[in-house]
Amino acid sequence: MTVPDLSLLTAEDLEVLLAAATAAPSIHNTQPWRFHADPVTRSIEVHRAPQRALPLTDPACRAQYLSVGAAVFNLRLAADRLGRRPVVRLLPRPDQPALLAGVRLIERPYPRERWGPALYQAIARRHSSRMPFTGRPVPGPVVAELTRAARVEGAWLRVPAFAGIQRVLRLTAAGESRNVADSGRAAESRTWVTPPGAGAYGIPVTALGPRDLAGRIPLRDFAAARRTRRAPALRFERHTQLAVLCTAHDRRVDWLRAGQALQHALLVATAHGVRTSMLHQAMEWPDLRHALRGTQQRRCCPQLLIRFGYGPEGGWTPRAPAELSTGGPLGRPGGTDGPPRGEAGSPSLAAEPGPPVIARVTEPPDHRIP
Image (cartoon, rainbow, N blue to C red; front, side, top):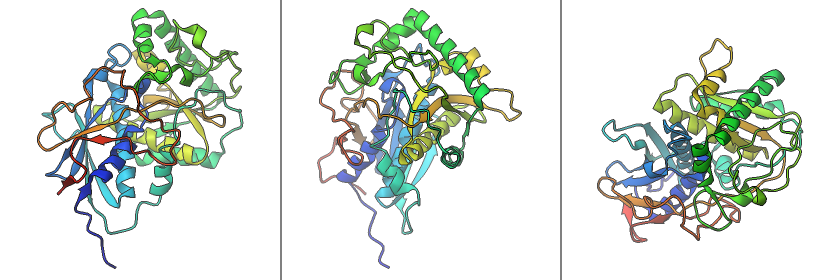
């Protein structure tokens, strides 16, 4: 069998890679990533974007690391689609703390990952649904597949029983109450709520979803000062299905692994027609996050809560066109260090059958990475 020459990476390949990466979920849709192509190592570097941090909601930047980890997982899937084997190094340069991951793309003259095509196709369909679910339980084999997906990435999903779910929801409600009462945090969250079509960052009001009429599910009230724009309250599912994403340790590298585990599980859910949304409020308060550890003997550092079930899609959130810097050390790629919002015209993921080519590269179309 003749092995094709995969030693060159075209600009079109880069667009596929970055379009997939930027489709990853991020807290408040801040999209806290920057990309750099290293022609020496033939890798895509993923850097944290400090200007898109949430100093009150996420002071340790833990949620930022989860978001970047999710983008890294999408890069891996896109590399597999291009016939490359992605080799990931997390925190590769201690002297560059903003460099969180390097994804080297090497020739791979053997079959693609068995899960790659299905999960790659799920990238464009995956998004958070803040709508009520039907209450129909997700079958045990599907839940088991979600837990396996997280375990492959070095994390695990703890699926509580009914009493545990009620406890988790109470802790989440306590975190939400504190966030609403904290004027600084509430204002910080509101800055990331945008009118429809206003920009490529943040969450459009149309994607917020309604409040729970029964008050069982404590959804984040992003628009506390804009209640007139909120959809009427609806009754959510009586029996909520939740999973706690955990890691054994709580280091920066564990946050990045948790982000990859999160995205792997979310895409498996999407491939099975299961809707998901994330609950983060309890993670934002150290005492509540500690209480989520539970009483298990196994060490558990909670990273995120995932609500899952069957129901409507919910609203779509936009993505900013990614810009890629190439050549020497990463500087300030044009457009990525601007204000959090205000870049209009970014296409939505909703209209595309696969990850849309929304990336913009800084080199001419015939550019190659040797």
